Image 1 (cartoon, rainbow, N blue to C red):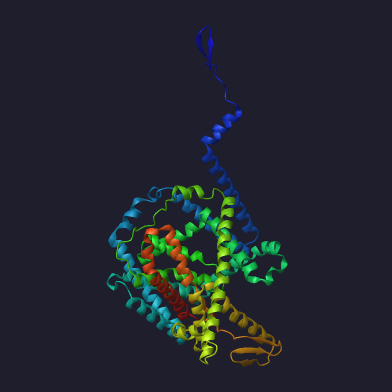
Image 2: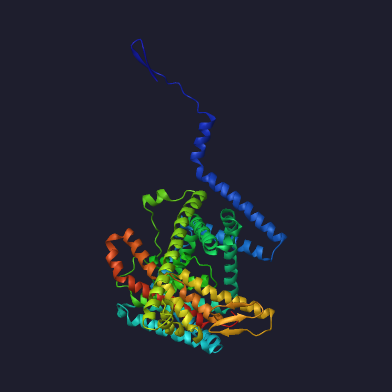
Length: 535
C-alpha cells in the first residue's frame, strides 16, 4: 500500500501471516490428486476386506458368485484404466512388443489359428450337430445361399479380404457352439438374461409410483418403456464410469486382430451390441453374434478399396464442446442419461403408434383393392408371408411355420424389430399357456384353422403356436435395425453430422439395408445350425 506522507511515497512492507484456511486450501490444491488416490485406496482396501470376510461367512451360493464376478470385473477395469493412462511399454518389457511386431511371428500365429480353429469348428459341427440333428443341414445351406448372394452382388469381388470372411464366420460358429449348443454357454446366457431381467424389474417400483399399481394393464407404455428408460440411463452412467468403453474396446481389439479389420469399424460393430432394447429370449446372444456377422457381410458385399485408417485402436479425442457437455459426476450422468432416454422413449412410442397405424391403413387399402376383384383378405403381412417364405425356409424354419416367420420379417422391414417381436411374442405366449395346460390336464385339444381350443379353460389360442426351433431362428433373424424407418433415421443422423457426405450415404443406404438384413439371416442360420432339442 502506498500513501502520500510529506510529499513522499511510502511503501508498506509489513509481512502478513497466511491464515489456517489459506494454508489448508493451498495444501489441498497442491496434494489434491494424492489425497483422492489415498481415499480411493482406503475404500478399495475396505471393500476387499468386506469381500474376503463375506466369502469366509458364506460362499458357494448365487450371491457369492455374483459378488466374485463383479469384484474381478471391477479390478480388471481399474487395471485397464491404470494402464491406459500410462504407456504400456513402461510396464511391460520391450521384448514383448518386439516379438509381437515381427511380421513373421504374426503370420505364423494367424495361420496356425486359422488351421486349428477351423478344423475343430468344422469337425464339431459335422459330428455333434449335423449327425445329431440332420435337419440342421437346412440352416447350413442357408448360409451358403446368403453368402452367394452377397458375393454375386459384391461391388469389388477382387478386393474381398478372405481372411476377414473366414475368421468372422469361424467366430460366429464358435459363438453358436458355445451359446446355443453347450450346456455351459446356455447356463451363462440364461444367468445373464435372468440378472438383466431382475435389474430391469427395479424400474417397476418407479412405474407403480408414477402410474399407480394398475400400470401392468398397459404393459407397453407403462412397463416396457420405463424399462427402456431405466436401461438407457444406466448405460449413460456406465459410459461415464468407463465400463462400456472398456467392454467395447476389448471386443473391438479382439475382432480387429482376428478379422484383420480396422480398429474403428471393429469398435463400431462391437458397440452395436449395446444398442438393442427388446428383452426377449435369445436376444442377448443374437446381439453378440451379430457383431462379426455385420462385418463379414459388409466386407463380402462392399469390400474396402482403401487401407483402413488405423491398425490399432485409436484414442478418441473429444472436441471442446463435447468435453464441456460431458458429465462431471455420477449424478450429472444420471440426469443427462434420463434426458436422453426420455427423448428416445418418446420417439419409440411415437414411431410405434405411427407405423402400426400406417400398417393398418395399408392393410385396409390392400383389402379394399382385393375386394374389388373378389380376392378377400389381402394384407401386407399375407403378401410378406408368401414373398419371404423361401428365406424363412432356407434359414431352417419348419415348413409349417414359414408363413408366420415370413410375415414377421416383412413387418420388421416395414416398421421395426420391436413391433415384429411383439407380434411373435403372442405365439410364444400361446406356447407357454399350452405347456401349462398340457401339464395340468390329459384332455385332448381342438384345432381349427391354426387356432387351438383348450376345453377345460374354454380358451382359444388364436393363430396357434410356434415350435422352439422357430422361436430361436425367428428371434435371431429379427434382431437388428434393418428397416425402412431406420434407413430414414440413418440418413437424418449422417446428414446432420456430415452434410457434405449425404449424397454418398444416400447412394449406399439401400445396399446397407439389404446387407444388414442378410447379416441377421446369417446369424439365424448359425443358431439354427446348432439347434438342439435340449436348448
